[in-house]
Image (tube, rainbow, N blue to C red; front, top):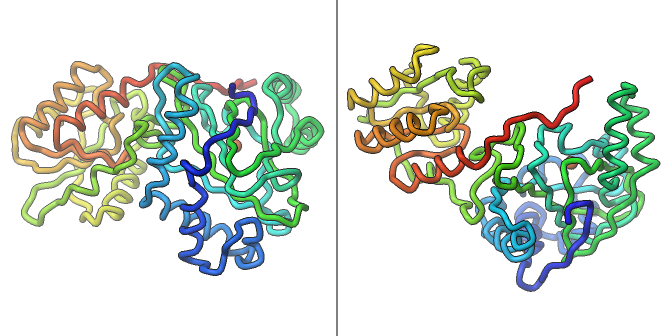
Length: 366
Ligand SMILES: [Fe+2]
């Protein structure tokens, strides 16, 4: 099902391209046909447009519609639960993109931080063919190339040449989508079609699948849940707020204070919060200072790096979350943009933390 296979969807019901065109027209009102976007948008402005469209799309119904498409077409054949990528990647491939150095290098998901429990859904908003499309390699050949490139320690040029020889363009029209695994090697070539290709790629994580560097909660959200809860939470002038760091978690033990702090600072900037007094736990003491802070009932908000800063032990974690709710201290998780302020958020955090246990690596090191 996912070996670089193309499927049809109902484009009338899932008019995803309308959202893309509207978002682009906000900045370039004269663009009507996406395949000739390059006639209006300067090559040096394409990267900026991709960022703007990606940001604006999150405030539309695009992702709730995308979730419905996944539920109707993909979920039934998977027969398992999935999480879905919070923000998809918009790609704009203009003609002769090699002149501005933006050809997508050959790679596969497992080489760019994706675990093998991920699957990619690739949806074009223009017809994609020949050199403007994605160039892809079947899974068996991809595995052979991966093995040989690792054993024989190829340089990038050799890898690139072998991939060019073995890949083929995905010929796909609007109203179709492509599915592939994190083992299908893919990349781009110089676009000589004279037409722009625009697409989005969105990943799902299968229940109990291997996420590797793409964490449930930050990179992935629950299917059908495209709202960001913390946007509702205000921090009032008179309220007591601290940040909290810890190093107990299997994901956080190697994330030193500097990086936890940067994530919280960035969260404060996005939410319009003042960066507060900084505190943290005693390493090796099982979150006992956090428990003390919550029992003391003097704080209204605690800002921490992630839901992975909470205890790994499920009973201990639920006890801490419950204590925060009971004592009316709002816990903010910067990396996920979650705030624990009601029971439903406790269930959401637990669902995400329990989605998979497979934290192994998909990368073969030689
Ligand atoms: Fe990729």
